[in-house]
Structure formats: C-alpha cells, structure tokens
Image (cartoon, rainbow, N blue to C red; front, top):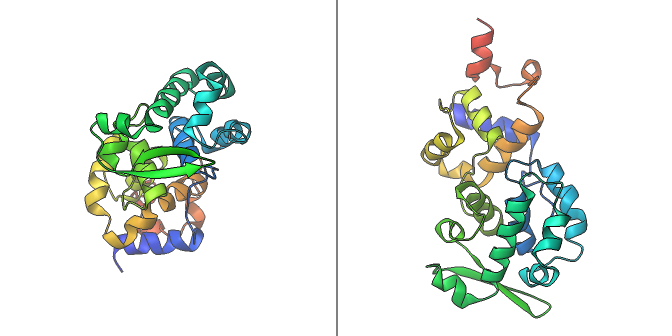
Length: 227
C-alpha cells in the first residue's frame, strides 16, 4: 500500500464524511463564512454568524443593513473591519451580472432567494477577482460550493503534510503548490477536509495524539522524535 493510500485510508476511517465545519444554509452565507474564517477559527466564525445568518441570506440583505451594522455584528472576528468592508463591497458587486462581467469574470452560477438574484463566480480565478477573496478562500469556496478537486492549505494542512513527510515546506503557500501535483485524483475530493479535521482533532499543533495514531510507522515527525 502506498504511503498516501495508507494515510487517506486511515483518516477516512476517522472521518467517513469529511466536510466543512462552517455552518451555513445558503451559497452566499458560505462565501461570507469563508471570508470571515481567515486567521480565525471555525468556532469563532460560527458564533458570529449564528445571529448574522438569521437575517442575512443574500448579498441584498447585506446591502440593506449597511456596512456599519455589518461590521458591528462581526466585531468578535479577527480583522473584522477589513473583512466587513470587503463583504459589503463584494455584495454590491455580485448582485449585478454586468459588474461581475466588468471584473473580467466569465463564468458564474446564478442564485435566487425570495426574488433576490445574485451571481457567484464558479472558478478559482473568477472568485479571486472579488474583494476579500484570495487563493485559499477561493479554493475553499470552489471546493465546497462547486465540488472543485482542489486542496486549500491552511495551518492544519500545512502542519500535517509536513509532519507526515508528504511535503517538506516552510509556508502554506509552498505546500499548496506541491499538493496539487502530489495528491492523486482519487483523493482530491476528500483531501482538503480530511486533512483539516485530522489536524484539528488528532495531529494538533500542541500535544498531538501520536501514541494512538496508526500512521506512526510512516510519519516523518514521529520517527524523528523516537530516534
């Protein structure tokens, strides 16, 4: 059994149905939650959006409450002022297909809720042209919302992949570039969330559960500390 197959077979046993832990009901809510999640835990985001999403379903709802009220409602989030401003600007753009097209975006999905129509780019490059959306955020949205076979790399993914010896990199950005070519196609649909959850609950930054992990024999970090 190859190393990657062994890794994903084990993690799949731990997390049979890996998916985002961000709570949302509508596509636009996911975009908002992912923007808020940058350098912030999913737990913190879910606390902030538990009230926000009671009244916010579409970008039109964001426009209606205004930027100041939006920023106040997410004040518990890291960098909330910048994130609030970007979400507001993004909302004003994606309610108008002409504005979306003027950004150089050619492909998008159209959504409607209670006569509110909005447009979300369905490619990574298109998503990155919107305010507040960088490479990682775009990959998360594309993966969760559109099923794109991509791997967004956060601190969990970066840490786990380096500990296991899948990559040897210094930054999440370097890890991201390598993983797209390293991870076989059959694992790309589950790799992102599987590795995140494994890093969040097992291969944690502090006190990882190495003694009970079944990947000890192939784990670069475990083998190095046991020498």
